[in-house]
Image 1 (cartoon, rainbow, N blue to C red):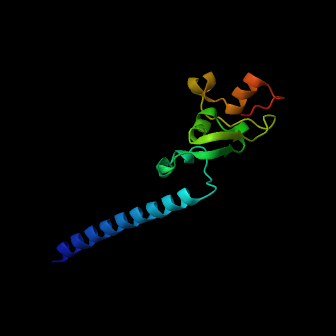
Image 2: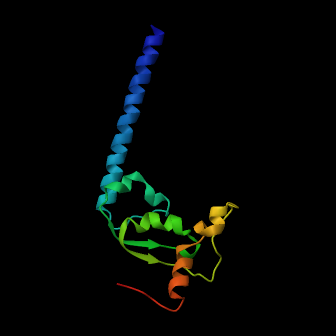
Image 3: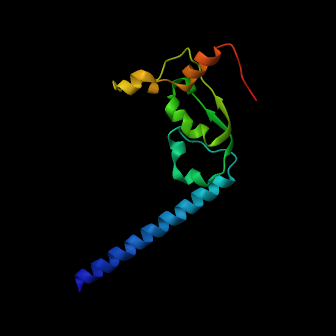
Length: 126
């Protein structure tokens, strides 16, 4: 009957979509593990596809003076070393939240924290 045909077609479509997703994830995983450079936003670095990568040798966070500290920790924890690139004299991050947490430090950048700890004329490296 027509209803049975629709159900069978739907099941097959669902199965094919699942197979496509599985194959796509496998290809992306192979690309990431073999790549010399992987680019992501700070929040995009939380993508589960990166969980299978041991650790990145180097994490570079561009425009770090505008990236909130909380979002910087996502890629930082995926790497062995980190470089924060940015100019703290330029515009600060745009924070739309009027929430108390943002006013009490969650709206602060990693750059600001490091500037407070070490000043702006010191370079630290290991």
